[in-house]
Image 1: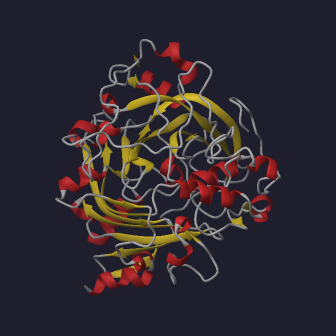
Image 2: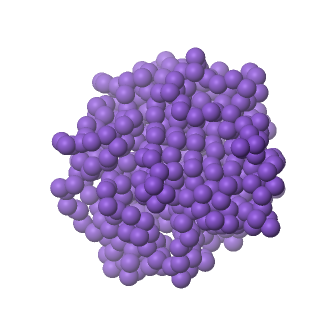
Length: 484
């Protein structure tokens, strides 16, 4: 019965406005294009972002210098370097029409659905998306050779060829939606994570169920070649991402563990599930596949919306059209969410995240519009995603159902991590506009650790220091749980 309940819970180009359609070209960058990219003195940054600010100065020029912590910084804390700044203005249901050209359809829908509580505090823009030199060196090296494989064009098989081991954003000057998705999938969230994470499932009446997990992840794409593990994926293939979660709460699902990886050559997530009630491991194709429910989400979000957009399998089901860049108000530099003393009750409201803790800034974002291919099936007929030009991380999305109704929307709260010096996700929110529920994917690392008296999150860009047994991502490693 315990295993049965656990399974039920488990299932539960460079100018603003440029439109770029699907292109048959899947080639590496030319010498002329490479000359546009650089850390200093080029029109584009190594990530392909426009170096200059915008015309009125509301978006500043990009700086290659990583953000320094404020005075008094202590390792493990996330002090807000912009704490003394006041909002430039606040958008509410009464005045949002004045700013519609800078809002996403998802934000507009929230003003309409929750006019009394939804608001956006808009602050000065800070382009904190800057990394250490090795990240840019890897990106420029990768961009010279990597290509989308011919099978992705002809058969829809997601894969890359001619890549270079050691990381890097593959397509800093993207020519189509597929290249944008690859940039996003391989953005530098970290090289490995080891942390306690928290997710919240909030029903239409405001009732909340907290989901707490132990989370272990590695990003082999960013590993130095000498540190790549052996035996975790088939010989000759290159690992992309490996993920493992062990549920700690709620009690009915405690002990459920999954582990799995995908590769550049085969993007199917090869995942296995450990069932504590049966003390056995089984293959779990329902995890990590297209529109299957996200682990621990009670069926309220899908794999396709992880990080705001996820391939979700080897076979493409959508045609991705790159719309281009646009200036939008998006969540950025959300240090308030990680401050000492800010707990789950302060973050998770009855209808949505506490908007007084969310910081919005004007940034240039890439927009990608994915439409379901003829003959394919998916919960989302259309999926629109917004990506930060400085990091390629997802900032927001909208998903439409098969009746073309706006169904689910999401935002992702980025923050600069002083250690290990990168911009990464601190939390997110996804709202179901039709049933009134919302969820957060397991993030909220500091809040989660305090709930279970666990250690602070470990996040590193050093592939030689992974502190856990990476066999946890294999069926053999999961089977060892049953012998403890």
